[in-house]
Image (tube, rainbow, N blue to C red; front, top):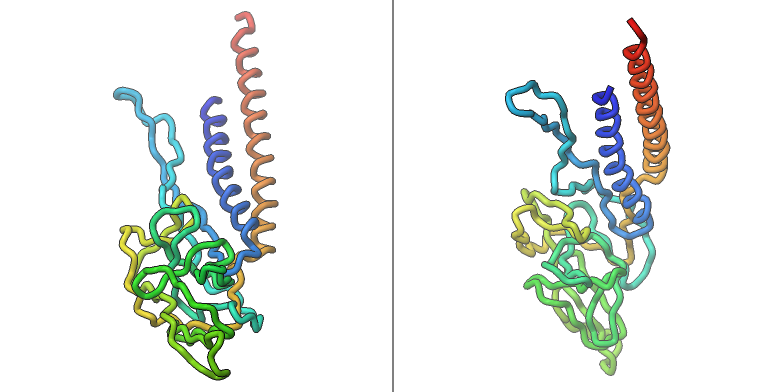
Length: 252
């Protein structure tokens, strides 16, 4: 009977991982450019005792976190510092919490008083040399579809245009990407792709999260039903075990 319980506990372990991923997706459903996490890849590992048969199997999961790179809905906002990438591609960021530079599709930018350009999570935006984007005070900021930053400086005649840098971007073609433990997107081999400036940048638009709320809610309900079934399975196994023990104790 313990094998039945072991099977149910393994199922509950896998369910816990899936529910955590689903909860993470639901929590970020309103975050611009968020890419939903995908269920981890699983395999089975047998426990072998000495020279005996393989009597137990355990769930093993991959350490790399995968995500869906499907494009989210692009909403026209007319915000002067709202940007979206049309089609494939990523911006470069220095995460606020530290760590190695990463890739991102979040485009709700803010210009800090010191001129640094950051996204809605306060991650520092990087240029095509992977250096922080820092802009002088300006009446107007324009970023074209290739990432070239053009400003209209304060104190200059209206209509004056001045190049002020490049917002780094890449298509990351042929690069295997993963989500690190800090939630940031990075190449599996650790080497960032070059800033090829081939991503198509749109000003005045935001890409929404690619999490489907209905799908995530249904997965949550399905997980709850699976949890209840496994708990019932464990109780049934315990009842069978008790009944078998009583039968074995009957006088012959």
